[in-house]
Image 1: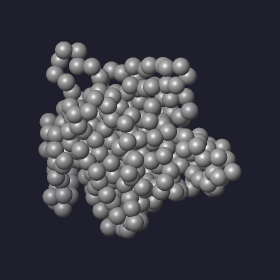
Image 2: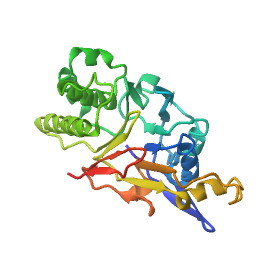
Image 3: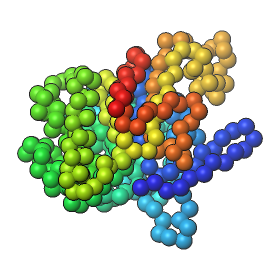
Length: 302
């Protein structure tokens, strides 16, 4: 799914040219921090289309899911002709304390809005990178495991949306899908069961487990699962961490807003050359992480 990438240096600044897939989750305790962080970290989080090398140029799209006043809003572009996608520009006009962003190089499903991440169901937002192995053969078996009301909810034809509905089906089996607030302790087992079923069906078909990464967002927290390319997280807390995000505006320290209570956490995957940036913390393969606005991340290892 991923194309190659490279790193270029200019003086002391770093410019990262990244693979075409991207998965980013941001959560903060103020709605003006996520887009500011995205702009500050654009060198790490942005994406650039690799050279075509004489072959047909790869096509990509992108999408953003975010929460405002308790509502889920989506911005999705199935096809983008630009050679680079700046995550700071993508989020510049988004004011939200929880954001799920995704850059997609289509491997399953056509380039249309219904196939563009993130996907939404009630209070859930979902995005994924990677491809289910042998999905053409597995599709029907996965579809048949869903209750009828979730089968009818499918709008596109991607493996990602089907995995999302597989997760929802396990929440339904646990009697949690209709709850307005679902705790992280219920999300981890449902996500684990979804991936276990996916692996079991793959094994029956002689396939290896699929290398995928998953991001779920709710109005209260973000959950991510690392089963594909390296995934990592970063947490900023307090004045010292946030001052660099505000210095670019030329605000004097005497006029700097009160940054001590600020807190933000980010989780991302599909980094350039599969290398985790030095100021991020790598997640172990197979692990899951939950992040809230105020607490330290909760990590479940394999």
